[in-house]
Image (tube, rainbow, N blue to C red; front, side):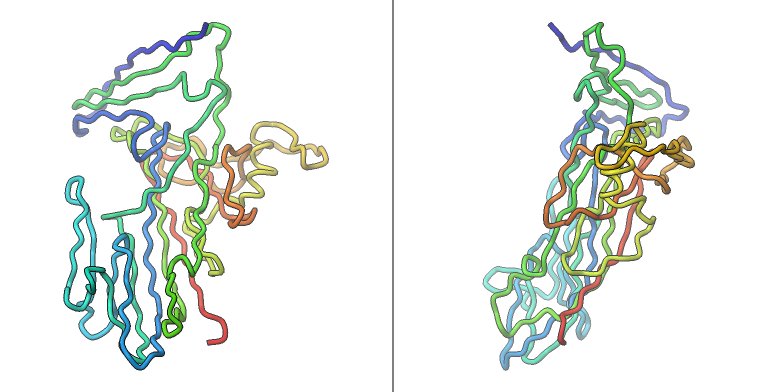
Length: 327
């Protein structure tokens, strides 16, 4: 019978600048290789009221907002204070109605409103656990910092018939969330029309337990949010490949296998420049293999994927824009 044995490890850091902390793997907001994904959104939305009387637009408090008119005093901002979320409402008589938060739009008015999810109250992207042939066993399951010392727990697979648990390859850790205009603005009102929106999405990937800068990670990440019908452009850094290339080509070539979807052809070994540089950079160029994740059908088969070799963190940004047809 197989059983899981637990052992400890202890290392010394070059400096003692790390505060005392303990991280289990996985954690509440990160997966079993420590990766937490955060999304920040900054959208300017143009709205028109074609009615001869004012309307009050209700805003989900998950978003900060600022109405761009007069002195821009109609606003709400949120941030964490300890474990609590604080919402700061400005000009409360104009930003609440029936105890709902939002803003007024005047008769025949066209107004631009900024909607934001900031790093002070970011959206946490679900990340799936990394798996080897040993599953989630035979790995570090806890990391503890105490001054210049880092220690933790290693789970052993107590089975002498298993020497290796396989080869690390960049598994996909997330799947895109598709958002639609009607879900963003479920406004059942013929007088209120969304004319256009444009803005920036930031996808921040953080190796949460890596306070001491000792633990590197190697994985693939997909675009976190797809705005249906919108133009998506200006990726920084540029994506490594599409999901289709990742599924049908990269993973197979990385593993030295022949894709069952293609006629066998001799393939050169994949080139991954800078792969073993210990820096928070993304690997660009060639793509990856057999993903353990299923994207939503609405996303289509092709969407951007990044291959990432990371120490502590990296930010991915891109722009989105949409304009109502027939304006």
